Length: 373
Image (cartoon, rainbow, N blue to C red; front, side, top):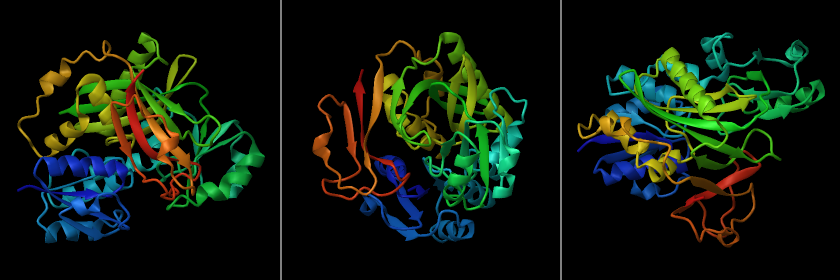
C-alpha cells in the first residue's frame, strides 16, 4: 500500500486527504496544530510545523512514506521539495523554485523588471525606506505570507506608515514588498504541465470583496467574461512563459492576473493547486480533475490519460460559479443565512454555532457551493 504525507490539515488539504483515502493510500499528515476537520480519517497524524524541514524529513523516514505533498499552501512547498529531493521521492519542482515562488520579492526579482506581465516593485525592510517609494496607489504585502494576510491597498505615504507594522507582523522574514497598483478586473489561471508541455490552462474570473483590503476572494466564475479572446490568449501565454522561466515543468500551477487596459499583469504565482477548490469547479465545468491528475501523476499512476486532457474544448460548456459562504471573523456561524438551494455541490467548513476562526481577519470562508449561472 502506498503511503503519502500531506502537509497541513486545513480545508484545502482535506481535498487531497479524502482523494488519497478513496484511492486506498495510507495517509499521514502533520501540522503545527491539530485543529482540522475529519482528522480522524488519517492513518496517522503528528504535530510538526510544516516549515520544519528536518522534522518532516524524520517523520517521513520513520514511517517509510512514499510521497510528500500539499495543496493550497505556499509555506508547505519548500518543505515538500526539499524533503523529496533529499530522500529521492517523486516531486514536481526543485527546492530552488519552491523558495522563489514562496517569496513574493524573489519571484518578481527572478522574473525580471522587463518580463512581460511583471509590475514595478520594491523590497522594504524598515520604515526608513518608505520615502523611496513615491507611486500611489500601491499594494503592500509581506513577502512570505499567504491567504491575503497582511495585504493592503495604500493610497499615500501616510497610509504606508499607518499599515507598515500590521503588514510586517505577518512576515516571518520581516520583509515587505510594495508593488504598483493594477486597476482592473482579476482572473485566475489553473495550469498543468507534463515534461515541459503545458497541457491545460483555464482562465476564470476572480471576484473579490471590493470593500475589504487585500483582494479577499468571494467567488470564481468559469469561463472568463473579463477577457476578450485576444486578452485571454495573452494571459495564457504569460502563464506559460512564467512556468518555463521558473522551471515549473511538471504538475500544477496557479496564477492571479489583473487586466489593466487590456494588458495582463501578474499578481501571484504558485507551483501548486490553489486553496480555493478550483479543481472542483473545473471538474464540474470541463470534466477535467486537476486534483486526481496531480496526485496520480505524482504517485506514478500509469492510468493518467493526458491525451484526453489535451483534447478538451474548454469554451463550450455551461458557465458555472464557485461561491464562498463567508462570514466575519469571530462571530457564530449560521448556515441558515445562505441560499444553497440551487447548489450542485455544497461543502460546509463550520457547524451552526461554531466561532469563525481568524485567517485574514475580515471575511472568512465558511464553506462553498458550485452552481450554474
